[in-house]
Image (cartoon, rainbow, N blue to C red; front, side, top):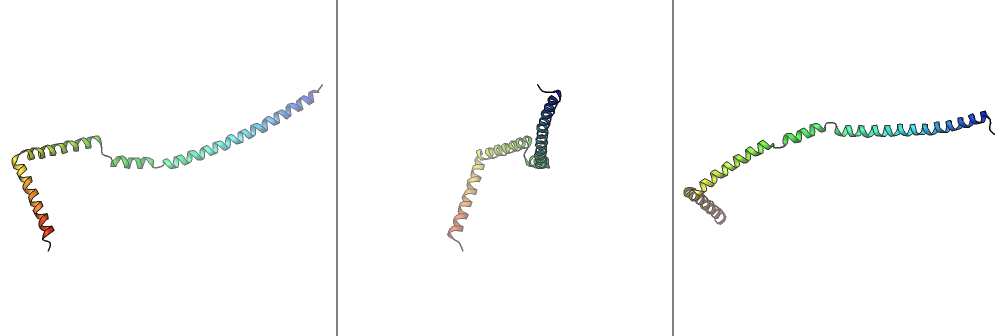
Length: 113
């Protein structure tokens, strides 16, 4: 049979072992927290000023309203051009301009000098 002192001694040993294990766990937890803090600091540094970069990109983008307005202006111009081309005077004008351009190119190519 063991004496009460021996039991207390055994309990003291067990407590010492548990404290040693707990101490290692606390050190591991602290080290993990330091690593995590370093990771967070790196992420924050990477994000620092990111809103300025995103704001710059957004300022270069065309808004939906601008796109739609430009599309409507372009459609109106195309409709005017189509109306002009559907008119016989418009077709004659374009044909005359094309003939002049072809003649000018031919003269330039054949009569350099």
